Length: 245
Image (tube, rainbow, N blue to C red; front, top):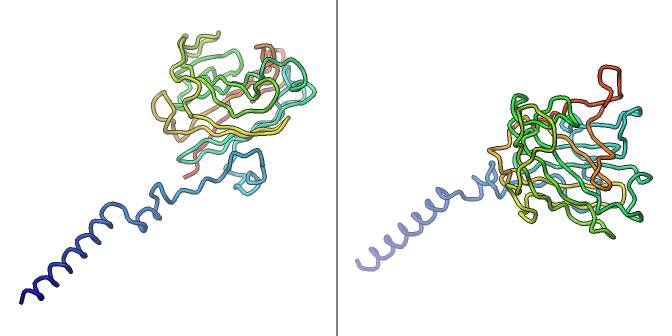
């Protein structure tokens, strides 16, 4: 009798453990959308072949206008999923060369994180003037290409205003791990970790802009436009990005 009771007790224990494992998110649940099932589509390693494997219709792209006033940035691509925002860009090596004194090549990312054109600002480089945050970092340490490790600043000026009205100090210091990057001279890729975005939740539909600088002056801006009489600076709206789910 004692052996039968012991056997029944052991069986009940095994069943309880099995049920608890399923309730806590076993392999089947994770495979249906849990964190462990995520496969990063772009590896940040300076080898750009995996970009060609993406659905091109899901990539937001901006190319430099031939007649733009600042042309050092030639191309940018943005692909966003639920975990990361991936960015690929190319620059003109005749205008930006690591063999010259380029002050570490400052690179900025400007994000309209809530997707609302009635918030944010910085009309100096984009016509919609709705950037909520500015990422400021460097592509090189002065001699070699390094991982992008920016500080993040929030807009402090008037809504849809202009000027360098960003928070001081940063709302997220360099070294936070929000970004990582790799590349070769003239080409670079990076990622932004969505869960570390410091101003609310990064919207599914947001917009973004980029500049590359030399001596702390922008020499390449994307998106851009050709100058006209009504738009002598050649400003364009920021690039619209739709998150892939």
